[in-house]
Amino acid sequence: MKYIVVLGDGMADEPIAVLGDKTPLAWAETPNMDRLSRLSELGMVQTIPRGMKPGSDTANLAVLGYDPEKYYSGRSPLEALSIGVPMKDTDIAIRCNIVTLSEEEEAFEEKRVLDHSSSEISTEDCAVLLREVEKQLADETYQFYVGTSYRHCLIWSGGEVVELTAPHDILGQKIGQYLPKDRKLREMMERSYQILVNHPLNIERKKNGLNPANCCWFWGAGTKPALSSFQEKTGKRGMMVSAVDLLKGIAVGAGMGVAYVEGANGGLNTNYAGKVEAAVNALTREGYDFAYIHLEAPDEMGHQGNVEKKVRSIEYLDTKVIGPLVEKMEKSGEDFRLLVLPDHPTPVRVRTHTPDSVPYMLYDSTGPQRHDWNYNEEECGNTGIFVAEGYRLIDKLFAV
Image 1 (cartoon, rainbow, N blue to C red):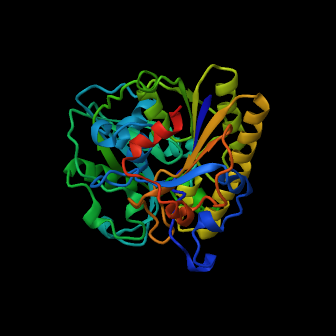
Image 2 (image 1 turned 90 degrees about the vertical axis):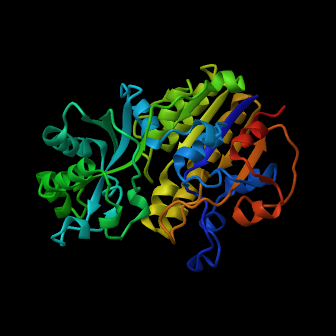
């Protein structure tokens, strides 16, 4: 038996009036998931432990079977693992987003976060900007590392875990009350704005109708993580397929394989076919038992507050991932179990994560037809099946 998770980051949502009071998942045309849902166990799962912030870090740890209350040490340290940052036990890793701040206000604290992803800026362009910041701000205590797209890393040698706010949680709001209390981090953020606001690359971006990437925003501080081996814990050899450094970092920390797919960018137009191919090859040719396919686009569209694109991201997940994946696995002759779910909701109404439970669909290629329900929040909730501790859901996937 082979085991697969397809995770649509932030895919769960709320009923939306323009969708006939349906959620994007219920509204989207998803013929492949509709077919599988009739052969699957449907239910709800609480991936975010009570009292913890709703993030992809804690939620994906839970989906992989790691209790976040035991294993979580911060988001950025997991990403640092992915990009090969040599963290010491005394280091603090901090996520460094290159964001878009409004430019008309004179005082820095009066500016607003307009876009946490700077129009989903490319890694190549963002690296140019980060290197300019690095030249002027880096020293023996603070070191910058390039990640993917707008997501980068700051290592604070001998630092401390400080309370920092995620930029996607304050879209449209004035930044003053959310700036770091630590004086040096705040100064570095303001200096980064001064360095980037008139950078030639940003001037060119604005001419082309793109948001300028004009400020470093620090958040997600944490210490060096210590995850137990996924294979030792589950008896399964696992492969991670994701464009996002966070997921790759979790995999590195857990001793899983990491597939590097050309053109995988975490956006709406990522290399879906390449991700499917990487997962199928891992399972059918490379001796892996388990593949985790992570798709970032639904979360990004939720943060953008774009209903149409969020629906499209779910339809792409269905037609470009679920359909080809199941077809290829069936042709391979391998029996397989497939778990489809979000990590957390990212409702377009609030444009950030919420801690609510999420719908899951567990399909077994050897199982009988079960019911006539479809995979969405309402119908999964109506089954009455609820997994209260998200990190135990993987036990259902691996159950004999």
